[in-house]
Picture: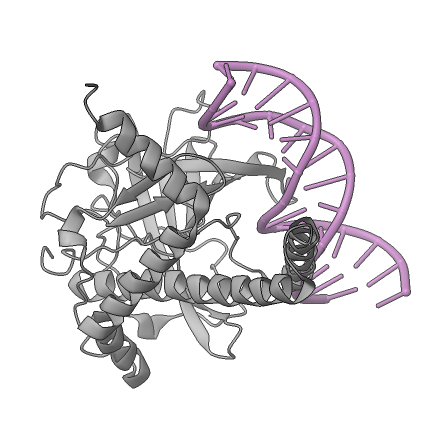
Length: 331
DNA sequence: ATTTTTTGACCTTGG
DNA sequence: CCCAAGGTCAAAAAA
C-alpha cells in the first residue's frame, strides 16, 4: 500500500486561467463560447499596444497552452487514480468487489439493495469518534463516456450510516473535506438530498450525495461517485499540511495565480519529480503514457515549459523581484 | 473581508 | 415537443 501511495501527484497547472470545470458535454458549447469571448476581449484590450496579428498569435498560443494544460492535469489525475487502484482495492480502503461485477451503465446504483454484510472498514477510523456506524457499503462501477469516444469507469459506492435521528445536518464524516453545492427534495423521499463535491475540486472529481433513508430516518445513505486523486487529508477532514504523512505520500502541488501578486510554487515534495508506478494491467496506451510522463525528456520539457510560462509572465517576474527585494537585508 | 452554505433558477435527460 | 425529475449553478445570506 505504501508503495502504491508513494506517488500521489496532484499537479494543478491552471496558469493564469480561470478554474475550468470538468466539461460536461452539454456545457462545452457554452464554455467554449465564454472562452472565446474572454480571449477576444483580451485581444481587444491588447490591441492598443500590439497589432491584430500579434494578438491573434497570442490568442492561439493561449488556447494551445490551455489545452495542453488541461490534458496534463487530466492525465496526471488519471495516472494517480490508476496508481491507487493497483496499490489497494479502493481509495477508501474497503474490500470491494472486482470491477467485473460492474452494473450496466443504465443502472448506476441499485435503488435499494438488501442489507448485506456490515462494512466498518470503510472510513471507520474517521467515524469511530462519532456515534454513527456503517450499516452497508455498496459499490458498482459505471462507465462514463469521454470526449474521445472511450469510456472511463467511475466508481459509485453507496454507504449507509446510522446517525442520531435528531441530527439534520446530513453530514457524514468520512475523513475527506466536502463542499455542499446543492440540495434537492426528491420524489421518492420526503427528506432532502444534499449534494457535495470534494473540497479539492476541480482537481478531484469526487462527488457524494447524502440523503436520509426513506424507511429509517436514523440512517443516511451516502452515494460516492468517483475516486479521490489525493490522500485522505486527515482524520478530521482537515486540509493536508505540507508535513509528510504516513508513507511519505504527499501530493506535489503547484499553485500559480498570475492574475494577482500571490504566487505559490511548491515543488519541494517528492523532490519535485513525478514518479509513476507502472500499472501491470493497464491498457497498452496507458502504459505508454506512463512511460512518457515518467521519462526524463518529458519532465525536462515540462519544467522547461513551466519556466518559459513563468518567466514570460511579467506579473510573475515583478512579484518575484519584489519578493526577493523584501528578503534582502537593508543596508 | 473571506469562506461556506443555502436556495431558487436553470439545465439535462429520459419517458 | 412536452413534461417531470434529478443535478448543477450562482447570487445572496450566513458564519
